[in-house]
Length: 220
Image (cartoon, rainbow, N blue to C red; front, side):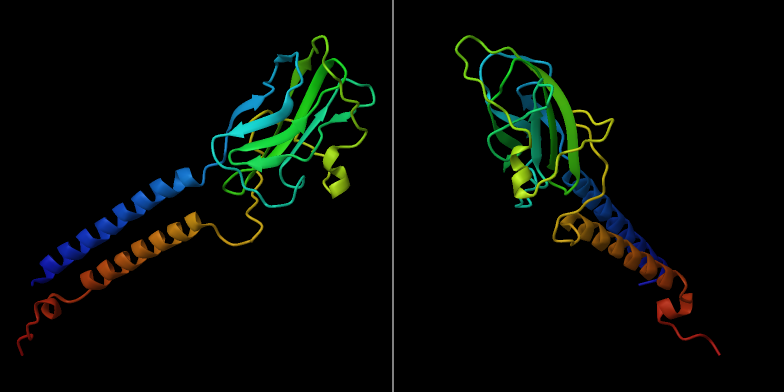
């Protein structure tokens, strides 16, 4: 095999490696995307006339459940009361792609929902929205509480950023509590390694002398 043939083969190998890297990155990119909000119940800006029973924040992918109730995934609902009473009968819980909190409302008026959750890639999302409560006749009203339901379990009050909106990403660079790199990162590192090795091989071959590649002995 001539030196030219060997160079062509190695260049082809390097090109294949680059295409493989592109494929890996194309697959890894969607996998590492943050969750987005699909719907909320009660819906933003809606008027509720019957006790909702629960408040649900639904996203497009499974949420990351870190196992600490009321710590990383939270929902807090405050009513129109001047003393800002909190409503909700238990901590919010992750249910696949949704964050769910049992909810019974109190006095009629505008209610404010503040939420935070952990996306499947480890990034936190937070936001806030409002809805109106106009209870129909016969609806039983909750009394509310001066502290959030989960405050007694060590959870702090949710404080969204000033420009947070429903579905807005906080852009905080958090990772899973294990502290390890995600699988996507290892795929990308491995792909880059393939490219580097292929590039070094091409350089080594192209720098060899033609006489060595052909296996011929130079004339004296």
